[in-house]
Length: 92
Image 1 (spheres, helix red, strand yellow):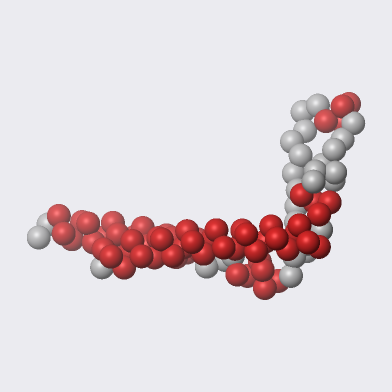
Image 2 (tube, rainbow, N blue to C red; image 1 turned 120 degrees about the horizontal axis):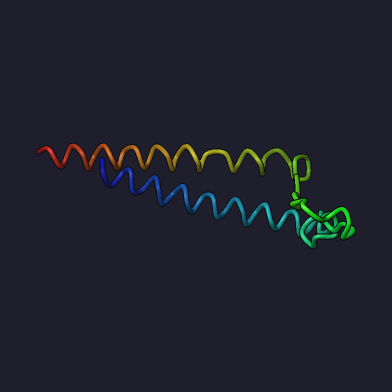
């Protein structure tokens, strides 16, 4: 069970990195203005005290966003399995 948990953690990290690469490539190809920062530039008067935020909802197809959902639950399940396996092994 310990190896399954570690494998899930590694798979979730790799999956997340692949998702972010696909997401960034899509934005670079179809919406480069989002990544170059031109949408977040403000005048100095309006910029004081404001944190620039880029909201990209609707900027990418749904399949790209849905592809990024499984890594977090896989990561949490992997941690849970690893912790449970370590606790079980400690009491053997």
